[in-house]
Amino acid sequence: MVSASSSTSSGVLDGFKLVRILDQDPKHKSANLLGEFASTANDGSASIDQAVLILEKTHFSEQFYRQLEDPNRAPTSDGERTIKAPKLDAEAAVLDGTERDAVFAAVSNLGQNDVYTWLLAWLQRSASDPGDADVKMTLIRPATQTHIDKYSAQRRVMVYETPEMYARKVQPWIASFPPSRIQWVYNILEHKKEADSILFEHPDTESGFIIVPDLKWDQKTTSSLYIQAIVHNRELTSLRDLTKDHIGMLQNIKDQASRVAFERYGLAGVQEGKPDGNVRCFLHYHPSYYHLHVHILAASFTSHPGAVVGQAHLLDDVMDLLRLGVDMKQRTLGYSLGTNSKLWSVLYPDGNPST
Image 1 (tube, rainbow, N blue to C red):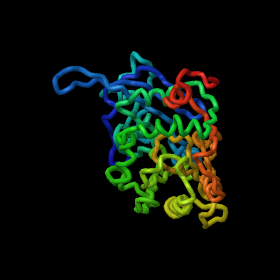
Image 2 (image 1 turned 135 degrees about the horizontal axis):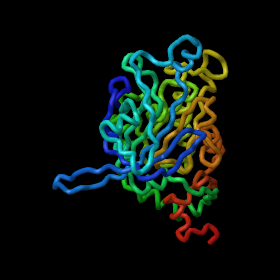
Image 3 (image 1 turned 180 degrees about the vertical axis):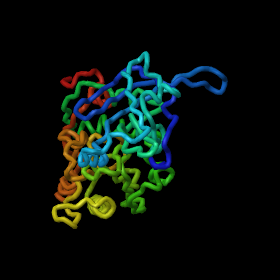
Image 4 (image 1 turned 90 degrees about the horizontal axis):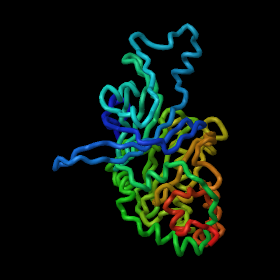
């Protein structure tokens, strides 16, 4: 992964044209955009790549607070220019060359893995004092219809997936996915991508895992710490596959995540100077990708959109159920599901849950 400090500009957005806004959330200051890139094939023919661009405003920076501490401090450095971002619309939002610079003063490429590229952007920037980025972005190119559906505004309903529904519909659907669908995960596990970002690794193929920062986290603000543990065992797709035999691995994930958050980022727990209780570990059902991974947040990070009832299952609760001998494949699991998702059509081919 390329660090932000080593890359101060990026051309990956050159030629991006907004098609429509898929979704936006004023509370979380985020927006999902559908766009396209025009390209030329080897034979000279023109082609269009669809892309999804996810934008999120960053948290207030330490520099912002320092400026408030000193009322006499100038808000901008000499030579710094303020650039007003134009309104994004389908006719005017072509980000190429100087027009891209009219939207962002600078763009930094954090890294790329398969179809995903992570970026930071500045709405204004000084060469002498660049400051912290204003916007975090994830570019998905090329974007499939699955990506577009996932990031589109849609009606959500609660689904209660019985063991029979899982065995008859969901499990065969997950098994049908080609390995290429999660190639970006294998790239991390095989150290082909993000190798310099690995915070911890236990390399055992059955009980091992890697801990890496989630690239949606700025890796600076400890109160919003967000890291992930990805297991090496490729047979584990979701919490449905977990058994008593995996308790040791799950406990090790929790212990190592807590240690990393404390030693690497200084995140203390219940008692100052000790890590216990400093992180909240959970699994999603259904997950965003079907290779077992654990989300790890700072315990105080309560506003994360993925840490919600109807999606997140506390790791400690899952381990406790496994100790009690619960068969995860025999549980009825409730979750919030978008009606545009592929899983919805798998569960309800006619679109009617009551039939």
